[in-house]
Length: 215
Image (cartoon, rainbow, N blue to C red; front, side, top):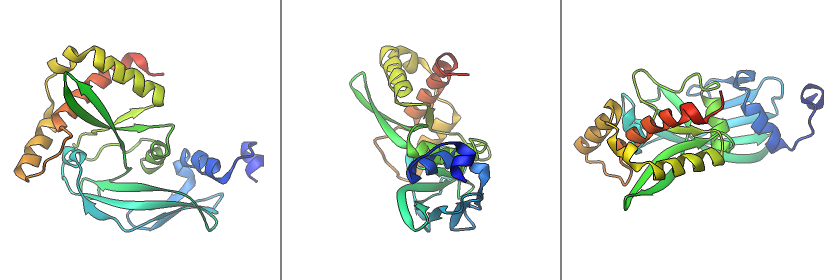
């Protein structure tokens, strides 16, 4: 049946990756059911553990900073193919995969941001969790993550930032970054990751991506 539909002879892991890019072909009710399965190939399943409360800097970019973290196990029949973390943000109003972090050293300062790579497993899982990126934001919240097409695009952007630090410095922080920093301070939360830097970097990325991504 698989070859008839896709014309490909792939390993179960590669099949799972391909199926995650067709989220509408799955039965899933994330937050209400602890599992999901592919409608045509039900031998491919995802099992969601119970999520427990946690926080990250990105939590404060959402209207409600409460976030919850769980584990997703990807299975083919009874065989575990791989595991990834998933999370709820904005007090369980939005479900996402968990991002990677990237380090940038600029003007002798250490900076971090969050990102997804669509070629990596958590990038494909993000596509699945958000129904093809249809649900990336919650209410009036921000989206404090950069989504790259691949590793090369991330490297090109990092190089651009390093070569154009004055452009980054001149950007005025937006509401979400300022609000996140204020909320963290009020709650006594501290981190090496600066929400204001993330806000400014996201603004720079949007301008850069307008001329450096495929349409």
